[in-house]
Length: 534
Image 1 (cartoon, rainbow, N blue to C red):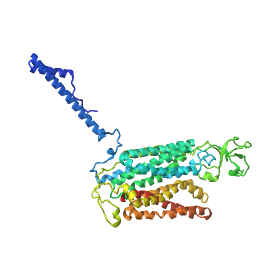
Image 2 (tube, rainbow, N blue to C red):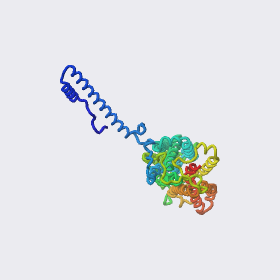
Image 3 (cartoon, helix red, strand yellow):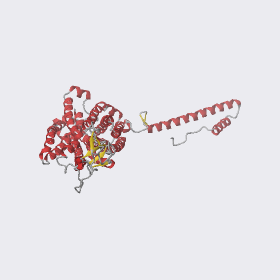
């Protein structure tokens, strides 16, 4: 709105001017026409001033809500996110907190193994029912998300650069939030395709956009220390994965509801109560599809009721359950769907809020007295650059050098092992080592293990990326090859755990997997700087 009122051509003002013109013209018939003409001239002059005033005010108003004649009813455009060309170098660290916020929101994508135990018992709650999903049906969901991640980063990278960090970050946050909400609906309705649509498709798109946006912005702000910049931004990725397990564990326990307890059966108590006296047990009938129902001759329970039997081993995996026995299918809740929906709202809000404050430097901005590192550093050389557009054209790198296919194979190999470990880490620990060391591998221990993987990823992303500025990208990637023998020994350790009688296979598995995850985190944090150096 205009702050002052524009000049008005009110009737009294027009009449006064007309009379003044007539007075100076002595009121003769000829001079009356002259006075009339003068009146019309002044009236048109006032109208012209009025139009010019309105045009000036409208232009000033448009300057506040548009840049380059493009409407900015929001502040998400690339122009609004671009800092002035004279932005102080000392303030470039202020651009990192929004990047950290986005990666904190998407970091939980790596803790998919925290959800699979509950999803595999969505109906039975305390134990898997015959109609529950198996791990072979659930684990490909994460693989689908990883494939979509690769497709997103390769196809939408140019769009992210064109649209700016705020729009791409907001879209990625919306996709990630929608992924968790859609997956929660799929779990609640027990619809497997919704899991692939949610976590697999939408989650992969959100993963890609929320990965690209902060990394691209950080590298533009730090052309002289690209490894350090990506390490700081991507360490938040690992931090998000470290915080998420405890948060998920607490929310699942909060929303979990125990199913209806029918009673004990011969499998769970041996027919004796705590005093050694015999008691009535639930008699079960197994149907052709493998499901169990209360038998018609059972003295306890309603005949024909579908049930599951929770043993001591099943109860040990659930922190909120303490009593083995027979439970009615479909009467409880694992709490996974509600916990996932809650985190979908929280992570979506955090990512959207952080995206609002994303900032990128002007295309011609460079840090003061910056020496841009190039691949020539490997020979002790240094080269400067007048802009922050660094590296060879992508078409040249991908078609005219052997660096790109070799780098692709290196990332592919490391990512395959890392993602395989992340997607099934908690399941491997509880299913393999819990039976060998039940006093050690408790639900809290398993949650702590998944958090330790996230901490290792965060340390690897920051430490290896900063170290690569000194050691060199190629030498750093050579060190990552040590993860291959560690991953290769994992099946052997799992096999030896059952007959070892000691805790050393568990210790070796725990420490080796955390070290491998640091390599996995380092692969992706060093990768943007490695590509920029090509």
